[in-house]
Length: 226
Image 1: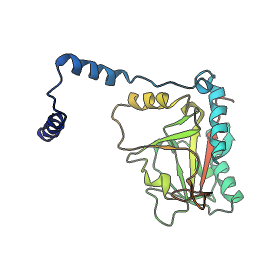
Image 2: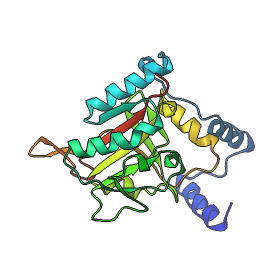
Image 3: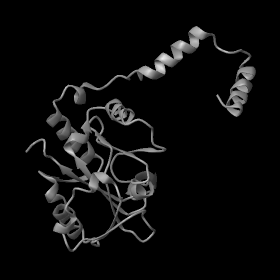
Image 4: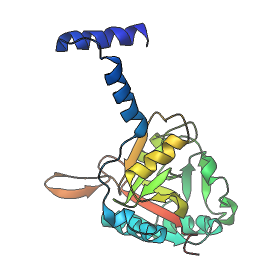
């Protein structure tokens, strides 16, 4: 333990009027942290097979105004993105995170897309990212920060397009965290996104895009169904 941390914790203990924990109490706490004890998990997701969890994720995400294009293989992703942008009358210029999970997408199959990789700028209207997991329980995307997945790209562009693989859909939040812990070091930031940004504070009316993207479109590579 660093000297500064030890000093801070010592001050907290002094304020609470107690001393250091004994060895037995420390061991019990460390065991609890290591085991990552789960909360109550709703049966509506955990009791389903994987295809059922995928369908539940789609249904739950659509309830909070996310939209979907379901494709059967990665080769269809560029065309799905181009068709969505054309259908929404949105620009074909987009910023994409340099995430390795997007490297196998053949973006050259949609030559009209103007793609540049990097961190989103103020004038980037459309952004494409990958994600870490998708929680069927609530229709929520789990995205993690890193050099290849800057958090800024999740929130700055007005339209956020996420490329999701069927194998990334999990039943519960706990399953998503298990996958993240299995990778080793934790990221600096984990973002949970359920639908586009919205608020009901303005004249008690639902307003999309108040604090982030007004559109969340998910291209689901549903290779499990295929």
